[in-house]
Image 1 (cartoon, rainbow, N blue to C red):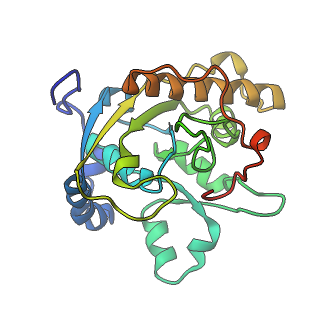
Image 2: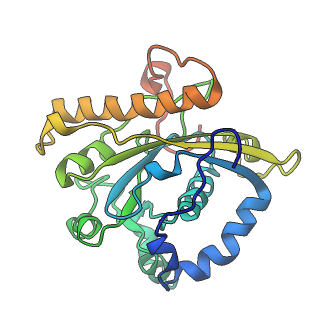
Length: 254
């Protein structure tokens, strides 16, 4: 990989080499993703080779999970996402999701957005990672900068004591334009993706009170934004976009 991208040699690739259902999924999916877009990964060594972690990407296109998931798999870890709990109740699909280690999240009621204790404990006990979009949905910022963050990733990090690894990417919006589910195959998209250093939350302790969550979330969003500034060669607005102030919904597309 040229131009400052780090080679992926020397990593243990433990999850990637261990026989699992991931071989069936990633076997055909990863090459297909590489045909659709040319992805350059920077600072791959900053994603922990082993142990639990929370990966927090920016979110601007519906194709983002494919782009980020393929990059994580290429680096050597299995990409696990939070998914609506209702999906796990679908025959066959639910069994496949569980086999892949995806994590169910209830979307309504008092437990809305909460990760089951058993799933959270598994992250630590089995040294697994999870990808959490701290914005909660596609950014509403008209220039595609990260918008105001939600506290889910921060809460999980503080309660479990798991490192938060920020990651930013740019170019996925060319492959699948904002607010569509249609691929744009020509010209071939060029995606830049950069992992960052763990976000320092050590001074906040393990009590996820309102103040700690707000501070942790702000640091996570600042880290993601800083990486994206480097990728784009531009400076983000001093204030992150707040959908509420612009009369926008924060659920789904817009």
